[in-house]
Length: 316
Image (cartoon, rainbow, N blue to C red; front, side, top):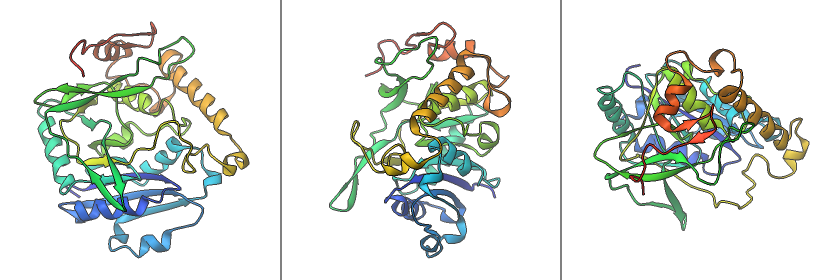
């Protein structure tokens, strides 16, 4: 269907899931062109509540008990499998607020970027919203800066550790900025992205966005950080334990694979992708561009374990 958007949402014990679903449909300019794939990792099957929604026939719902799940990348790979040929894909978290007309904003920006790239990917870390007395509050972005995603200075590359932390920094600009990294909580592209850059289910949490970004780049996709984002994210407080963390609580102890093992397995897998002999098939690098070209664009040289800043002095 022309103009249709497939929205992929992986939820883990998230009380905001239905807020996100209702807000996406209520704020869309064309709700009839929205399709949502939900991977609901919850103690109870919430299918009855999904079926009670007015847009139930536009929602593809999979329920998984939290004890059976293997982390966010595994869940998001299942979410991508619910894609059914829609023109666009939007991936967001299950605690997301939408601006009115978010769908038309994203379609228009994608059309604009087609003048610069045959395969644009729109992504950055969304601005925050907060729940105050049960009501969402947010401050719209002014549209004068792009949030450029760059490696955090506290985490360096090492020969046995390709995993980096990233942070968002402002760049004053009048147009979207080509970048080297994506946000898993806000990613918009042509639907073909799902088939060409599928989620690696053997990753766990750290390294997820690096894998997506580098595999997309080497397959000829171009990442752009926009001046405004029509979605907002309910952020957790860093360093605070939450029951909605996959590695938290008694459920973690009952799993066949613990979070420590999954974290180490993902680290070794990312090392193999970026610093080793590579990964096979769709989970490996593409042939359109090389890691050396990625290093030239990003300043992140995995082969030499060095990081330079191509925006030297321009970010704030």
